[in-house]
Amino acid sequence: MSHIAIIMDGNGRWATARNHNRYYGHVRGSQVAKKIVEAAVENNISELTLFAFSTENWKRPKEEIDFLFKVLSKYIKTEKQKLISENIKFQCVGDLSKIASPIKDKILDLIEKTKDNTKMTLTLALNYGGRADIISATKALMSMAQKNEIDPAGLSEEIFSSALMTDGLSNPDLIIRTSGEKRISNFFLWQMAYSEILFTDKMWPDYTKDDFLEALKNLKSRSRRFGKTPQQMKEVNPS
Image (cartoon, one colour):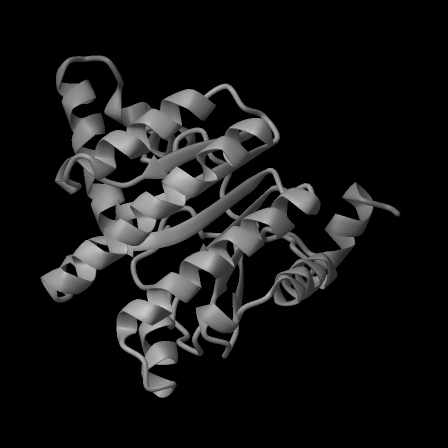
């Protein structure tokens, strides 16, 4: 099983429903993220992407944004050696230029120290938006065309994909969204063309390893035909 992506939603609402402030939900959410990373490694998932902070999340109160990045900073500090020792490659997709130092420096340091790891790729979508990704790729390709580095007439899906922030990642096999919301919220708009999508009513702080394993089981039960008929798939995979 290749690539699982998760939209980790519901931290604030989970905390509010329990008469806590939203910050408490973000702390609990980070603890769940650690457990799901462990579950992904245990089940030989090669790529796990967690949607941590969107381009739209900057609209939230500054105090909450600052706290979110404090939680991220703590996660990097506490998990750094574990990621290194367990051969996990850490990377980010998104515009990191808007993220202040020293948090950005910690992120870049962890990316550098784990760049050659091969057990699993853990990707944080951080200050990421699907539309921004597509626009950025389009601008890059237009610039290359103006320099005669590519022929616009020969533009293919493969060439366009190579200009996206996710270049090097496979497209997600499964996208999970917690909290009961049934929308993608500007996440992996290009990459999700043939992804299976699983919505769960559980808030992210309540999500468990068992829920994750059930999602993997659900994925295995689905028939992914990529436009082909069931008969064609049987001919390709007779077993």
